[in-house]
Structure formats: structure tokens, C-alpha cells
Image (cartoon, rainbow, N blue to C red; front, side, top):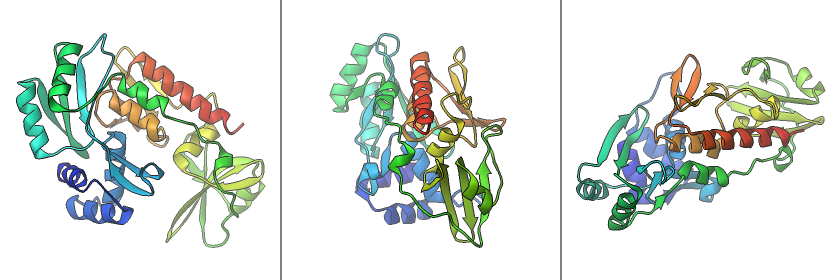
Length: 294
């Protein structure tokens, strides 16, 4: 992933096709796992290195470098997000004088962390490097999130013929076998239609079918009282079932808390370094998503 991040930093932006080709060239394939470009898109998006899709004008765009930090009153530690180059990393190592740490991550570029003695020292280093500091970075990411409603996605006809159909279970939070007939008679529910050529996700709401992103629609199914997120703030941990990853900027906010992608333990995605204000903000955002489909 390091080489791919250096490439996107040098190129700056491009189409989905160029990113897909370069990811396939630089990353190993995983038998039975997600495609290389999908793994890279999740890692780069979650770690705030790149924007994809609508946020990048329909393609991809690397983000400018920034030090993502926490509350300046309690911590002067920051992680480097956005574009990077070998020259920038060398300058940072020299300027930080033993306060920069590079840690390998599985399935992601190396984590680059700076541990300053104080907020003032962090600001001084940022000025020397010409890289801004974003204090309370996770909360800043959350502030940019807007929960979509089902009505913001286009109506569509239900697929018919040749599809395997699954329904997302609210109680089990997994996909269960279903039928086209069940989908057609359901007033509210999320269905996945799969074939040899791909998958479609259809949300039924008030008897209307809409093609939707499943990462958001799952929380419409779970509703405002969702219990997907589990917290252990004494350890700074927030976890979700692997089938219910938090959408977009909520995932990014949780990742930016530590700069580390979530680990997987007992079929749970486990985010680390999570503070009470961030957990409260994520919980409120998930509740807002659920309320949007009432």
C-alpha cells in the first residue's frame, strides 16, 4: 500500500479506471477476497488519504497532507493523513528529531505518527513543515457528515428472473435467504440481488423500491434504536459486527482517532483510540440515519 500511496500522491487525481489498474498492478490479489482496488479504496478513504466518487468529482483525488490531532488540551499526538512523498517523510523525520514514528499496518500504508511534548511544539513543527494541524480531527470529520434519506436515491423496478435474493435481518444483522416475491410484498426492508454479473441492493420503503448503498441502508433497517455499536470507553474501543460497517465519514472519524484501521476479532470490527465525544457523535449520526427512514 505504501507504493500505491506514493503514486496517488504524485499523480494527485484521476479516474476510477486508472486507480483500479494501478491498484491491481501494485497490490497482491487475495483469493476469494475483495479486489485490490476495493481494498485500497477502503483503506485510503478511511485513513483520510484520498476522496472517491462524488466527493472527488466522480473519480479519485488525493487529499493534501495534514496532521490529524486530538484535543490540544489533552494530547499533542498527531497522525499524518493525505499525500506524502519520500522527500516529505525525510524532512519530517529530520524536523521531528526523534518524535516521528512509522508503524506498519496490515492492508494499509504505514502509520506516520508525531508525538510532540505540547500543543505549542506541535504547532511549531507544523509551521516548519508547512503542513496544517487539524485539532479534534475526528470531531471535524463528524461535523461534515450528513445522513442521507431513502428519498435521495432513485426509484427502480425490482429485478426479476435469474437472481439469488437475500434479505438483511434486523435481529441477526446478517443476510438471510429470500425471494423476489417477498421483496415485492415488503413495505420496508433491504434486499440483495446477486447474479454472475454482480449485485444490486434494493431498499423497500413504503412499498417503493430504491437502489441504495448497503452500508447506509443497513442502518435504515436497524432504525434509530440500533444496537450495532458496542463501546468500551475504558479501553477506547468501539466495535461493530463485520456485516455492519459504519458508513463513510463515520468510519473515517473512528479511524482517525488512532490512525489505525479497525482490527477484526470475534467477527467484530474493532476501532481503537475512541474518545467519549467521538463515540457520542457517531451514535447520534447513526440515530439520525435510522430516523431518516421512518
